Structures are given as C-alpha cells and as structure tokens.
Image 1 (cartoon, rainbow, N blue to C red):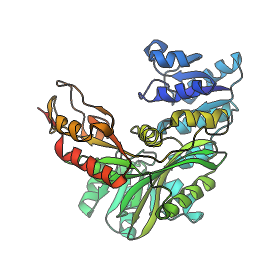
Image 2: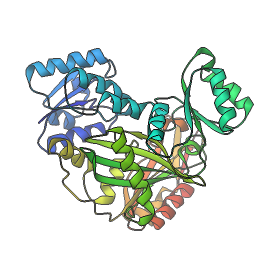
Image 3: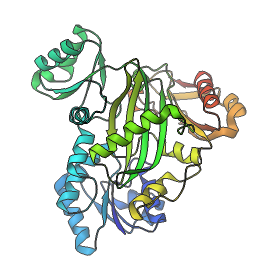
Length: 406
C-alpha cells in the first residue's frame, strides 16, 4: 500500500508515524515544508519519496504535490496527524479522490461550536456553546448562560488562546482582545466545573480497536495559566473498570455519529456536579507525546498499531494494561535562561527504576513561556503498575525538582 504522509519532519514525533508505516510494509511518500535533507536520517530511510511544499495548509500547493505523486504511482491513502492539518488535507483528499476522513467529518472535528451543536442533536451531553462574531452576541450568550464562560478560537486545539471569563469587566476586555468588535468569530462556551480527562482510540471502519483513558491534574486551563503548577497527565491501566463504562460509551457514540472511519481519535471530557459532559474530539492522535505513554504502559508500539490499522485494516497487539504511565511538566522559576536544577538526584534514587525518559534542557537554554505547553521546558515520564502510587510519585516529582532560571 502506498501512503502519502503529511509533514514527516515536525514536530519531532512525526517521524514515528513514518517509521511505523514502513515497519508494517507500506511504501511511504512524505509531503512537508522542510527540505528533504532537513529530515532525520531515520525518517529519510523510511521514506520512499518526498515532496516539498510552501505550506501543508495551502490546499492548492498540496493538490499539486499529490497529483505529481499520482502521476508517478497509485496512491492508496493520504494521512495527517496534526490538528491544523486535518481539514485542509480532507479537502485535498477529496480533490485527489483518495479515501479517508471526509470533509464533513474533518470540519465537525475542527469547528468546536458546529461539533457541539451537531452532537447535541444526537443526544450527546455537551456544555452550552455558540459561535459568536460580535460584542452583542457574546454579551447575550454570557447573560443567557451566566458567568463564568469560556472563550476560545473555534478551531483551536487544547487550551491555546482559551480564556475563562468571570465578570462583565473581564468580558468587555476580552471583546477587545479577541477582536469581537471587528467581527472575529470566537467559540463561547458554558464553563463546566469538574475533573477533566480524555478518551483516545484507534478506530477501524468506525469500530474501536484500541482505547485508552487518561486524566489531567489539574485541568488544562489552570495548568496552562499558572507557573507554580507542575501539571501532569496520567493514563490509567484500569480502563476496564466499570466506572469508565459511561466514558467509553460516549466516545463510541461520538465516533459513530461523526462518521469517523479509520483514524486515531482524541476526545476530551469533564465529569462534575452536572454529570459526564463531552468537551471536544479530534480525528487525530493526542499531543504532548501521549502515545509514548500508551506504548510504555501497554508494552506495544502504538505508532505501528496505527500504521497496521491503515495498511492492513487490523491492529497487531492487545494492550497489556500492565502499567499506568504519566508525564509531568516542570516549569522554570521565571522567564530567562535555565541556570540549573535541584532535586534530580533525589528523584532518580527514589524512582529511577520507573523512569521512561526525561528532558532537562542544559543550563544556558532560553526558557519557554508556560502557555507554550507541557513539553516546552523540562519534563519527566514515569510508569508504575499501581495508578494511585504513580500519582503520588508524580506529585513528589513536582514538589522536589526545581528548574532554576535567571
């Protein structure tokens, strides 16, 4: 099978998808923005061909590149795994008559207000939401729903540019900052209080072949706004427990109604005093290296599982559920340059046997802002057979390791 894979060079784990495809016997042609010599040697070896474009979100440039490849050889699939690429690639896929995720499905997975409106009609419990493009509309929404509310880009991923609004004064400031007085569209949502987690799958022809459940501590919005927090993500090895039945049933219902066929999915959810609520879904893998946690915790290579689902229509392995696995983000004490670390030897002595891997930028490295994400600065990943003990370990890491900057 001949697969076109979009943007094999960036971010760094994109190469894992290419290598997974090659490992299960696919011929892989990459389409990306970097020159071919900029790709890692491992990715270059896994690729049978490469087309460079000015932007993988430029649909005409992408169509031209795909047609160029099709003039040379038959193409079976065109695959993308990054949120911002999903809808443009769906348009290109349709233009080139290549099977895969449809434009309608890609649009609904990208446009948050449209997604929630569609799923509400199909009985999926969602927070109230609306796409607003004027000051009057967002004021009316806030008056109808009550504070707090959330404002975010309609096609955003995670907590990027997401803002919690608690008062009228904050709303008026946000109207100016988000450009609503100039007609910019923003997704306005009811704020849901509760625990936040996600349900991720590999889905083949609409049927779930792999499923994983993970938790945020604390929720993403708080994690991405406060430097003093060392947030962590933990994937449970207890996903077969009855308490997760409702989450899994909701995820499968969402996948079915959105028409997601053979794809990775990433669905976020909240559970609180209003019960279980759907947040959003993408027809792509989760970010921040979460598949590495799933692979380490379940003793498999999820990138190869994804590749096998596309190339052979089946997965290779059954998850062992032997370990829970987690990643904790370690923030620098201030913006500037990293000058050193404290507590690393203590953590290595206590938990070294359970460390999957870690990243500690060397002294002199410029720090990245908190809002740049979980993996922007230092981080460490751990696994353990007991979920609760792993949580305690991650909490201890967050209290112990200090990233010093000046």
